Amino acid sequence: MSAPFAKSPARPPTPAAAPPFEVLAHAQWQGLELLWCREDIRTPTQWAIHAPRHTVIVHLGGGMRSLETEIEGLGAAHGPPAPGDIWLVPAGAQYHGQAKGTVISYAELRVAPEAGVALPGAAGAELGSLGGRLAHRDEFFLALVARLARLAREPDDLSAMMAEGLQDALRQHLFRDYRAALVREAPPRGDALSALQSRRLSDYIEARLDRRIRLDDLAEVAGMSVHRLLVAFRMRFGSTPMQYILERRLRQARWQLLNTDRPILEIAMACGFSSHGHFTATFRRATGTTPQRFRGGLRTRAAD
Image 1 (cartoon, rainbow, N blue to C red):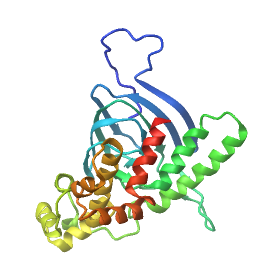
Image 2: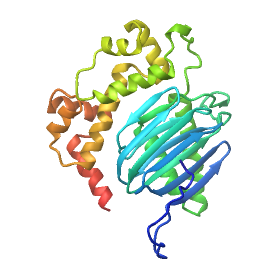
Image 3: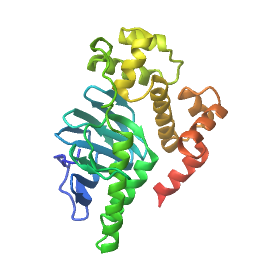
Image 4: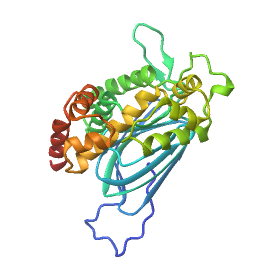
């Protein structure tokens, strides 16, 4: 995603024109690299990742009218992101994305599987395998990355010291919350979801976020029993079907709050919530704020 895209402007750019791709800040530590990027995606833009390292993309701002992403073995996500949405591409997995919008900014983290992690009260460890994420929401991770990106632009020694401490906290967070289920017993071969089953499930869910989704329906899509689906779904997606669907509904709601003027009740119903109150309570639990405050706060920041 960090590679600039060759574009053919209709006329030669003026000296003041922004480049189609720009690295605003760059920082590197042992086994961990951070890039803060800005990219012009007013023409359809494609991204591809296939690397021996883990790659984490954090959308920070800018408008997207469309976004289609897919991670090998995990499925696909459809629809534009809200600031703070995260994609984690595990080492060795393939990622494909296609987007169109305006000028966007994002952070790209490149993490070596052998990167060290300092664990409180224990010997150090390696990050090892991480589980993939598609359009995932993690407010703590967002705050860490955004702060690191700002510190990376500062030349003084105190900023460098603060960044050193924050990147250590980021490693610990990845180790604690994103490691693949290495210690869990692998499911029997017949209980594992194939790449095709994963894609069918994610597409089915994305297309029906405004409707009631039953476990029986998901099991039918996957071609397995409900019990086998629950085991296989968690191993593939890192969450239960209920958690996955809720996260997708909240993601769609965040985008609509930021990019449309639709009444909150309409957004709630369009994203599969049963009422204004149900949506508000669920949104507050997930984000710490109400939909109305989220909408106002993000728009205020976007205008600054």
